Every structure is written in C-alpha cells, then in structure tokens.
Image (cartoon, rainbow, N blue to C red):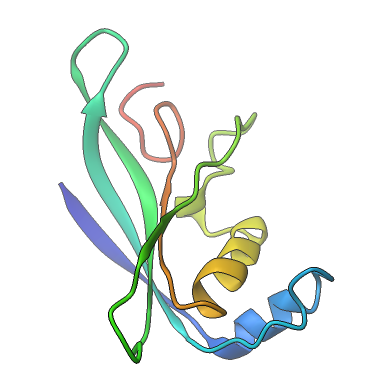
Length: 119
C-alpha cells in the first residue's frame, strides 16, 4: 500500500549492538542500513483483506546486488513488540543479518500486531 522511511541504522550502531551478543560480536559490520516501515494487504481469517505492517531493511551502498532474507518471528504477547517498532531486540537481527552480511531483510509484523487493521 505504502511505506515510510524510519531512518538509518549506522555501522557504529550495529557494532555496538553486536558487542551485546557473543555469537555475533566478532562479525565485521559492513553496512549502514536504511529502515522502511511498509504497509500491505494480506488475507484475514474471515476472507477479507487486512492491512498489516512490517519492516524492510536495505544495506546502504552495497557493492553488488543483494539477496533477500525473510525473518519470521514467533508469537508475541504485546502487539507493539514487532519488527516495525524497531525495538532493541530487532537491532540484533539488523546487525546479524543485514549489517554484517548485506542482505535485504524483510520482517513482517503479522495480523493483529503493529499497524494491523485486525485486532
């Protein structure tokens, strides 16, 4: 439907986030990232179309075309604890998958979460 630019996640922010996670703290951070909140439609349980949101992350100035990686999160208790809200938990995924490797990262919020028209 549309998108909204959320800002930049810098290499320096990625390096700081990586230091909190032993499994990835030695990975070199190669890219700063542009963050976009997206709005799109998907089928709702009743068969109608529902509007939902998600986060799309693009490496800045990649050296070559990038591959896309989709991150599917588990069930959340809080409808605000989703990728498009760009919380600290999401910074871990941005760091591991996008900044260090250069993937385009797609992170849907799911029905009932984020900006979903289904409550």
